[in-house]
Length: 269
Length: 353
Image (cartoon, rainbow over all chains, first blue to last red):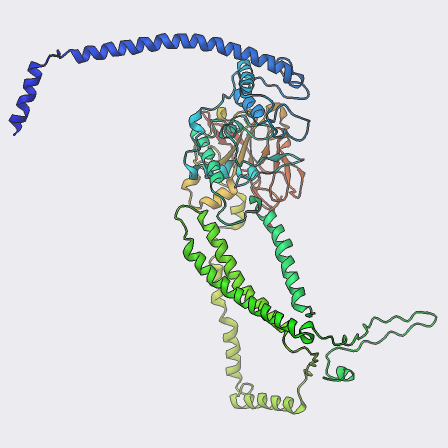
C-alpha cells in the first residue's frame, strides 16, 4: 500500500512542469512587490498625513484662539481663571470638549456636562493643536474601548480605585463644597478612558503606569456590564445605598405601619 | 355593663391628691385628667342598613378571595418564570411577582379579618376591669405553708452541709465558660497589635490588589495610588493586615507641601503616603480631590488637607491621618522608611497620644 501510494507522487515530482525553484522565486517576487508597494504607499501617506496634521493643527489653533484663549491664554499658557493646557494632551481636550464640559457656561464648583459646542472635526482639530504644544496623553486606541474584557477584574479594580467617589454601581456621589463625582451610567467608553488618563478637574490621574490599558479596558467592560444588566434586587432607588433606602423605609414603610395602626384602632362608621 | 362609679374599686391607679392652693393665690391648679366617660353609642352603617351589611360582607369575602388569588399567583409566578442561569436580571420579575403574591395572600387574610371584626361583628361597648393583684389572705397563708412544708421535707435549712455545698457548686460551675471564652482572645497584646502595621524599613509600596511594586517615576503629578505593603498576599491574616496598612499615595508639586520639622525626608519629591484609615472611626478615606488636595471621608465627611500633612479641616476626626515615611530603594521603587510613627485609625483606650 505504502509503495503504491508514494510511487505516483514521486512520478509527478519528476515530471512536473515547475522547477523546484519556482515556488522560491514566486515568494521572492511577491515579497518584493508587496514590500515595495507598501513602502511607496506609506511614504506618500506619511507625506500626506503630515500635511493634513499641519492643516488640522492650524485649524485647531484658530478655534482655540477664538474660543478658549480668553481663559486659557493666547498660547495656552494659562491665566488666573484657568489652568495651562500645555502638556494636557489630546485626550484631555477630547474629554472636556467632547462631553460639553468645556467651554464652561459659568464658573462654579466644577464644569457641568452640557450639549457639546463643537463638531467632532472641530474637537479633533483643537485636540491636535493642544497635543502639538507638548507631549501628553493621546486619544486611546479603539481596542481598549470595546467593552469586552474581564468584568470580574474590572469590578475589583473599580471597587479599589473608583468606587469610593463614583459609587460601587457607578451612580456617582458628592464631594466637598458642591463638587461631585458624576454618575458613570451610559458614558462613552472613550470618555471613561480619557478621564482616567487625564484626571479632569478634581479626579486624580490614573495613568497607564498605575492601571495598565488592559486593566482600563476591563474597567470599561465592568461599566458596560452595569449598563446592560439591571439590578437583580428590584428597585435600586438610585443605587445610593443606605441613604435612599433608609429614606424609603422611614417615610413609606413607617408611614404605612402608622396608617395601618390608625385604621386598626379606628371605629367602623 | 358595669356602672361608672364602681370603676375605682379594682384599679391599680393611685389617687392623685389635688394640691391645695396656698393662701392668696387665686388659681387652684389640678393636673388630674377628667374622666371623659364613654362616647355615646353610635350604630354603624352595617347596623342600620341591610344593604350596607351585605356590601361589607362581600368586601370581607373579597379580601379572603384576594388572598387565595395571591397565594396561587405566587406559585404560578414561580413555575412560569424560572430563573435563567447566568442572567441575574431574570430573577427580578419572578421575585417581584412571588413577593407580591405572598404579600397579597397574607394581607388579604389580615385585612379581611379586621374588616370583618370592625364592620360586622357585634357592636356594643364593654368594660372589663383589672383584677386586684393581691391574692386573698387564704391563698397567701397557703403559699407560706407550702414553702415551709418544702423546707421541712427537704431539710434545706436543717442540713447546712448540703445547702452550703450546693451554693458552692452553683458559684463555681460557670467558671469553665469564663476560662474557655477567655482563650478565644488573641495571644498577643491587642494594644501592641494596634500600634504596629506590616510597614517596616525597606518594605516596598505595591499596587492594590495585584501587589506589583511602584516606581517613583510611575507616580505622575495628580496621581492617586491605592497601596498595600509588599508581601501582604502571603501574610497569614491578610485582611487584618490590610485593614491596618492600607495607604493612599499621591504626588503633589513639592512646593505645595508644607513640611513640619522632623518630617523633611518623609516625602519623596512631592510623593506622599498617608494611612487610608480615618482617625474618627476607621472608614477608608480615599476621596482625593487632586486640585484642592483635600481628602474626604465618605462616612462622616471629615476632610484632611494633604498640603498640610493631612490636617483636619472639617468634620468629626480629631487627629491628622498618620503619614508613612517613604523613600526609594536602589532600583527606584518606593519603599517605607519605617512603620507609621503613631497608631493608625481611631482612638482606643490605651492610646497614649
